[in-house]
Image (cartoon, rainbow, N blue to C red; front, side, top):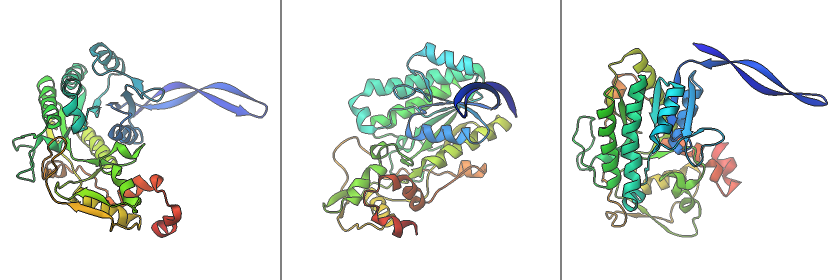
Length: 334
């Protein structure tokens, strides 16, 4: 189902160009994505946009010109964009998601992860929009996996605590909202530092120097395209069935430490891995991490919702642009 709208386009003809007005089809299912400039937000915007949704993304520092500039801490600005756009669905990707940054800037992190999320949930309820709040596996302490949605959270660090408080704020202000907990993400990054997975690539490909890699924490690296697809599938199911709400889990199903991820990355690009050193001790620096916060995803799977990309395929797609030694081009792809 679509509406029609006028759009100005530049038409080039020999000798000059002209501005013309054309009819364009606008899908009438509307979705607003917060944090649309970020790793998951970009993938989520693209997923909805390419599947017959009218998607509007908002960001802050990097928003313009592609997305709407909205400070989520400005309640008036949030109110205005939701009232103007009248979304059917809001996917709330914006967050401070770096545990060590949260520890160092707790007040700012709490404002974004908790207060802004609660306000967004209230505004979503005001227009009848289905809100999907992106949360984390770090709400669990990692001592008794796998974790179902009904298992008691016990976050070990302030990041996990702020996201758990954000979950509560969302569900208190909007009883029809959904919480989607996910683990560590990777995908098409703008720079290697954007993901805790892709950031390892330089240590992998510069093999002239040995590199210590964590071999203690068990992770489940998850492709952003898969999470974006799950968000869209969940939104579309909800539009048919209002009983779909509450807390959900989604995760990749390949268990790896950072050392094992690094070795898998090396293998995907036919690079040496003998310089990588597994460290089996519990990390002492930075925010505490759960040993194994594996998520049980059966609730979504029972709804017929899901998508999983194999790590080898996903990481090769993500890191190929950052490969320094292009001599591997032939062996990797031919």
